[in-house]
Amino acid sequence: MAPRVLGALVRRYGHFDTAEDATQEALIAAATTWPKEGRPENPLGWLITVASRRLTDLLRSEQARQRRQDTVAQWTLPPERVAPAADRPAADADDTLILLLMCCHPALSAASQIALTLRAVGGLSTLEIARAFLVSEASMTRRITRAKQSIKDSGALFRMPASSEFDDRLRVALHVLYLIFNEGYSATTGSNLYRTDLSSEAIRLCRLVYQQLPEDPEVSGLLALMLLTDARRPARAGPNGELITMAEQDRSLWNRAYIEGGVELVTEALQRGKPGPYQIQAAIAALHDEAPSFESTDWQQIVALYEVLLQSFRNPMVELNHAVAVGMAQGPRAGLGLIEKLEADGTLAKDYRLHAVRTHLHELAGDVAQAHDAYLRAAQRAPNLPQQRYLNAQAARLKR
Image 1 (cartoon, rainbow, N blue to C red):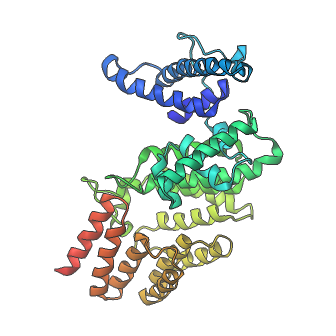
Image 2: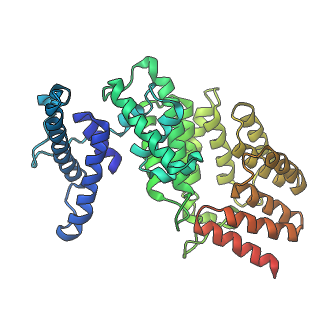
Image 3: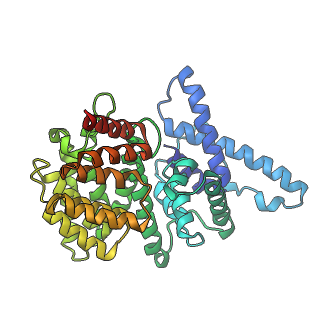
């Protein structure tokens, strides 16, 4: 809900940085008021009204300070930007999409666009974003602060970008939504395996983009990928939050509506003859979801799709997933050979996922001792508790 409040404030008043402060204070007010007085009938409207009042107070304080410095004109609020009265209903319009594209402003570097959108629209903490970028929290704080200042200095208006800028901003926006979804589907910190709030918000935002651009095959592909992946979430964790791998999942728990919707989207997108990375990844996800069992998965077709993907979208995680598929289709030794090459590259040498894949392939090959050691190495590097517990439990199983 916070991105929708922030979007409403930026549209009405501008002042991105101050609007974010006001939004946070409104959320704090809700956390202290609602438990005592009850949740209001229109929570979003309540938050926007309280945040608007607080923003007005902050801007008036800033006006007073600027007045002492003879720069009051810079901060004077236009008459049409007066905060709404307490009894005035909040606008029904959802400004999150405009906020998303605004965060992808060309004045920012690609890395800053992603970081700012993850913070303002995705709701990730600075620490979570820092881990995604493999930098320190302090460094990420400085990056986000500079990005906000760049938006302010650019004089950007809160509106849809011009057509000449739209494609570039859309490309970055889709990548940001992809990252938000991934953080929600597999949390990098904490005691939970996933964060439904983030994955659901990424799907909601992607639906908004799809409503605007239903003919864009990559928009359709990304939405399909999210739906097909999130369809498995109900079966990914046991009653105590423990990790359940795809091979062990009860597929009857998978979300059939999401699977059917995702398959339809990616099928239509691929028929347009412009396959892109999101469409190909969605096609791979569809093969997993449509297989009646793990054993009956069409691994040969998945290998072929990954090889197409690697031609235009080569990165370490795609190569790792390709190694898994090769190991399942051509035997574990073939997959382990690719893992050795990937580890030598160094990018994923310390990533738990590389060690987890190696463990799986070693166990398939009958190398129990090596699989046990790889499980322990993966557990030491796993980012959240359910993954750590699962990997340690597998190591203990092999030790018996």
